[in-house]
Each structure stands twice: as C-alpha cells, then as structure tokens.
Image (tube, rainbow, N blue to C red; front, side, top):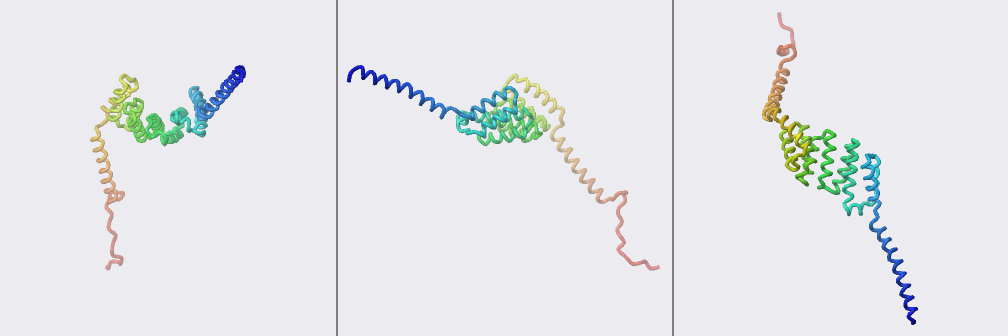
Length: 242
C-alpha cells in the first residue's frame, strides 16, 4: 500500500473520531444532567424573587410532580420544600405551608429551616405551644439557630411564659451578639417578667378560686333560692283527728 493511501485512511479515521465523539458526549449530557424538575425549580425561584408567589407555588408543584430523583441528589429538592412553604407563608396560607413542610420533613426530618418555618406558620395560626415544639426541633439540629431562638421567645411570650422567653432571647444574643431584634425583645420580656406575679401566687390564686367555687356550689345546692332551708315533706298523708 502506497504512502498516500495510508495517509488517506488515517485522515478518514480522524474525521470519524472528531464527528462521533462530540455526538456521544451530547447524548450523555442530555440523559444524565438535564432535569425537568430542576428547570421548574429555577423558574419558580425567579418568580419567588419577583414576588409572584402564586406562580412560584405552581412551578414548585410542577417540580415536585416531576421525577425528583436527580434534583434530590444535588440537594435541590430540600429547597423546593423550603421555598414553596416560604411563598405560602408570604401569602398567609399557613395551613397549606404546614402541609408542604410536613411533606418536606418526611424526606428531611432533621432540617432546621423546615422546622423553623413550620413553627412560624403554627405561631401565625395561634398554636403557640405547637410552635415552641417545632422551634425546639429546629434547635435540636442547630442549637445556635438565632432565628429559631427569637421565634421561640416570641411564642413563649404569647403564652405569658416570660421567664423562658427571656432565656430564649439571651440564647439568641449569645449565638449572635448585637442582634437588634433579640436585644429589643429581651428588654420587653424582662420588663414583663418583672411585672408579672410569681408563679406560686398564680397557682395559689387558682386553688383559692377552685375552692371558693366548690363551697359556693355546695351552699347553693343545700340552700334554695330565698335563703330558707327546704322543709321536709309531711310523711303523713291522712287527715288529723279533731
């Protein structure tokens, strides 16, 4: 075989290699890195940043309704739940937000942000004790989570538990010294705690009220209206003899 023929064959092989390899690489990218759930999530993030919460929620739902295998692998699925609940909270849909957060916690049971958001939604529904429980779950994952500590203090104040609220605000300041919100709320809680009667007096007052109510009920039952003691009915039914 002549030298020219050999060079021609080599050139042909080189052309084939150049044209085939990029095509294979493109196919690999399409099948392994493209993720429709991620596409919906990215669109939802744009809508959320623009304040279009209704659109954002619909797009997050589209993401969750797609195959979430790949978005879960890179951690994006967690943010779908977090950000969808944030949009629902911003719209005042607290019950729907709790449902979203519960779904997220089923997948990420120790995520402090999901627990904090759930506590915030519960707080806005007036479920302060449940909110404290959720904040405690968040703090179990991150004891220095300043936002959860402040939020816990707020819920405790709503329950008139000022001493524990003071403790929560102090912990928030310890985790984030100089935090303006924690400083302001701590001052208010300390003032409320100082003016509130001691818990022992409250318990004593409750006991006195219960006892007084019991005595009043007993007296009322024994003494009918009019203040006179009820007379025994005459046991004799016959007429008296003259």
